[in-house]
Amino acid sequence: MDKQQQTPTLIIEPGKSAGRYWADLWRYRELFFFLSWRDILVRYKQTVIGIAWSVLRPLLTMIVFTIIFGKFAKFPSEGGAPYPILVFAAMLPWQLFANTLSETSNSLITNASMISKVYFPRLIIPASAVIVGLVDFIISFFILVLLMLWYGFTPDWQVLALPLFIILALATALGTGIWMAALNVKYRDFRYIVPFMVQFGLYVSPVGFSSTVVPEQWRLLYSINPMVGVIDGFRWSLLGGDTQLYLPGLAISVVLTTLLLWSGLKYFRSVERTFADVI
View (tube, rainbow, N blue to C red):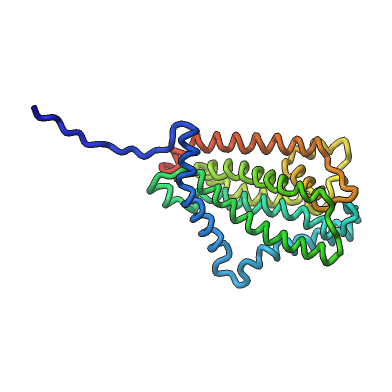
């Protein structure tokens, strides 16, 4: 008796279970490294001064904030640190957050051709964009080291905790960026909302001034901005001395960042399979 031949069907789709999905992310790790390297190469392509922009932007912002808040407004510094170091210590996490958020929020749109043609875990795209912000952060960190040498300022033992606050800053940026990236696919208004968030956040976050100038009765409410705890943590790590870490604000930042990252991943996974149709 002839047996009916059956043609095998291959279905490529995102893993249905979380375990399979994370396994897919590991299998496609080479794509992650490729996208990260590509984004780094094209970051300042066809610019006159190239990667020097990653130095000039925070440096010029630091000068402006030092003049406005340090010279004119006469705001106090922390830990006996010169005011430029106070500002630049806050510019590091803010630049990491702002650059990462800007890159991740537009990452799916700029890679639309890839998404519509082949399956891979889409989370790789915004995750790889984080590396660009991290490279700018490393370059700017060396500028801070030079500033400290110039002023003869030496950090205390608290600097050992700096990696923890770098991770917290990355988690805050990635959690927010994943939300914005997923929403940007369906609602293109977010391409205009994100730059406004970054610009507005720069002035309401304690970048140009110490958060200690905020009245004590308002400080807990002020810490609802998760970057407040991140910036305070950076300053505590880098400035040392009598710099105080506002623990309630740090706790709020950790909780909000965890919620942002968890909810962002959950929402991203729920709409991921629709990206190819909508984008």
